[in-house]
Image (cartoon, rainbow, N blue to C red; front, top):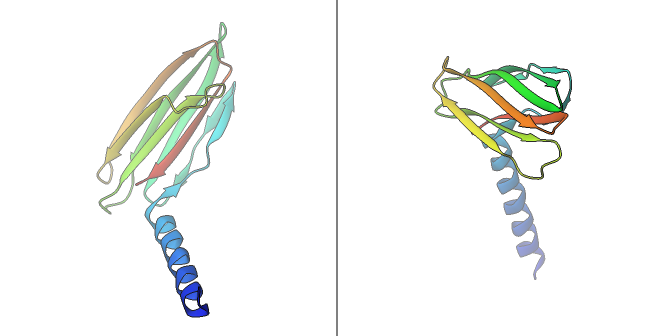
Length: 118
């Protein structure tokens, strides 16, 4: 491959990665050991939830909302820490719109939740 083609390919890869970063903003996924409270807030979304445990089960309750009039939606995904796949997905679209979340996970002691915009 010629030097010009390698440089062009590298620039194209950088442009694709940059475009991907601009499209999706994400709050870090955090393991919520009991008890745990999270209040992520960033451009386009905010939320607040609490993870509690009782009788060998974890529960996550709270809300999240879309905070920008940008045509994108605030989204959340939730999974028990011991599960390798996200088990709950939801979204809310339109600035100011919000959604309540309440999920119960038997035989768990922590829950991971991630708020993002797409």
